[in-house]
Amino acid sequence: MVDVAKRVEMMLRDPEESLIVLSGCGTSGRIAFLLVTSFNEMVKAPKQKQICSYIIAGGDRAMLTSQEAPEDDPALGARMLDKICAGKKHVLFVGISCGMSAPFVAGQLDFCLKHLDVFTPVLLGFNPVHMARSEPMQDCSFHFKDVAERMIAEQRHKKAFVLNPVLGAEAISGSSRMKGGSATKIILESILLAGHEAAFRGKRVTPECISAWITASEMVYETTYSHSDELAALIHQAGESLQMKAHVYYIGWQTLGIIGLTDASECVPTFGADFDDIRGFINNGFREMKNKEGDLSFLGPEFVIGHKDFVDTILPSLSQNDVMLFLFTVNDDLHEVTALADQVRRRTSNLHAIAHDLEKFTIPVIVMVSHLQRWELSTKWCLNAISTGAHVLKGKVYMNYMIDLRVTNSKLYRRAINILQRFTGCSKGECERALLRAIYSTDDLSEDMTSADVWKHTDGESTVNKFKFLVVPTALVMIQCGCTLAEARHHLDCHPVIRDAVSACFSSSKTKNFIKPLDSVEAEP
Ligand code: S6P
Image (tube, rainbow, N blue to C red):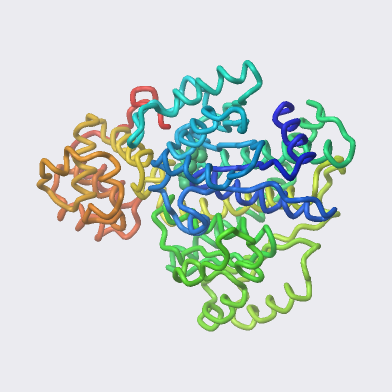
């Protein structure tokens, strides 16, 4: 981290020729965007040139909606990186892949390794290199693990860097929006801020200043979870709303608004939620986001994100069952917060706030740490807890597994098979066939279907189901009850709560309900 922070310092000292790029897919791309937005905002203050940029697989629309397919495309990653870096002499590239698995990022790192005269590549992930993904990638002669090993080889000459503290399994079996996303934020923020302090405030980059930020984050963690009673009450409230088919609305200001939007949008692929179950809004909409592609509201209702939009479209039909959660700090325009709260209060008293105040934070002021970054982290932890807890209460999680995930890329396809194996004890082949039956909505798989590439199964265009209808739970019921697709769907229809449907199927089927021990199935990427 010290070496990488020194590169940041060098780049900031030579802004005309340099660029720092943070890139990732899904949550990792969203965290990249958030970090770049906050960092550029900070650099803007003393009129310095902004040299930090982000790439998210699938473009800016992926910040608000699930665009999992571009994650599988290494060539696309390389092309996007090449384009953004045109004309730059020095590029510090940080490829983020929590599971060390995203082909999009592997393609970018490979591109950097071929142009080390310009690029210093950094890989950030939370697996040991020997556990990086080694599955073949789309139209590609290498896999992620190859690239990670080449990075390690170059690290010996300080031409590339691998940052991979091992955090354990992805929190609740496979969502990098939680533990991996927070660690990404803490690590990259430490690096960027240490580089900034060195370039503009005459500080030296040392291991001590890096660990000071990590210690500060630990204190944010302690402060946040010291409010666990209040958090539990919010989880309960949000869970009740979702169970009543009502909604949770996050109304955030500045980057806390981005945290709200991110948390809300991830519920769709992670829990099979509808986009309007939990929604985020930000003051000034896309103007506040400052994303590269600008206003995307023309793309559809998922992209309508301003407070004004909330007032115009949601407020008139807001009910007492909907949870309103305001996210702001003392630095925000409190008159504006109060005015909006008054409007909301006329329709519902189910109004709550996560409000950050300087006095409430007992963290000593550490030189390089800005309050905003701490508030962002704390808000992220709160919202991740609320949305996850609410979906657990809604019955979207079975024995700690998010079984209603959308099978929209090769990683998620493997994860789906893995979950089926774990719960049914059946072979990989049997589980894959059941998954394909659910994906293609048929009991009779054709040769074309079974022999197609994984990318065909997951692209949503070639399949009938388009991932909308409970793919993994359907496959699970078909295997466990030995029934047809129609029978499995009927079973799910009779149990609106997924966890109840799966439990009922296990208790009624003759086969003993068991879960394979973790080490008897492939490790999840
Ligand atoms: C979000 C979900 C995904 C990942 C994305 C990248 O909850 O887990 O969107 O963020 O697949 O994963 P990774 O491991 O490359 O950072």
